[in-house]
Image (cartoon, rainbow, N blue to C red; front, side):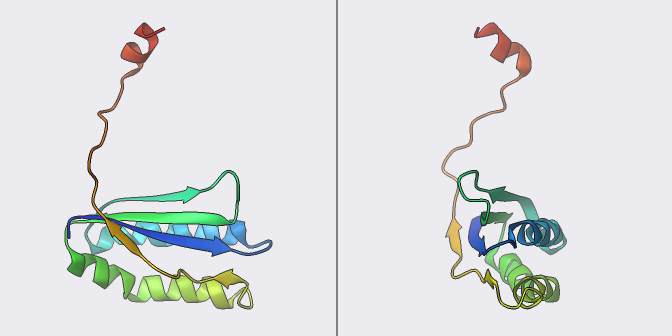
Length: 113
């Protein structure tokens, strides 16, 4: 596999902050399952809309993470502790990175004016 998996989440009314905290917590756990990188995005135009992105070298590592006890506990807690007000993720979207820009250092950026 060697790529990223993107999982969209949507928290409903008044549950965005709780969902965000849960996603940050479960994203960090991915490193125990062989993830090389993770990120959680919270959209500016809709604070209830979030995206979990996790990079794995193998599909087996992703499967172990997705079906692992920590992920199941976190998503169950997120859904049921709020009386079902958070929508569970409907799908995952495996993808592979085509190109990544190199980091830009501050000196180069300031020389561009």
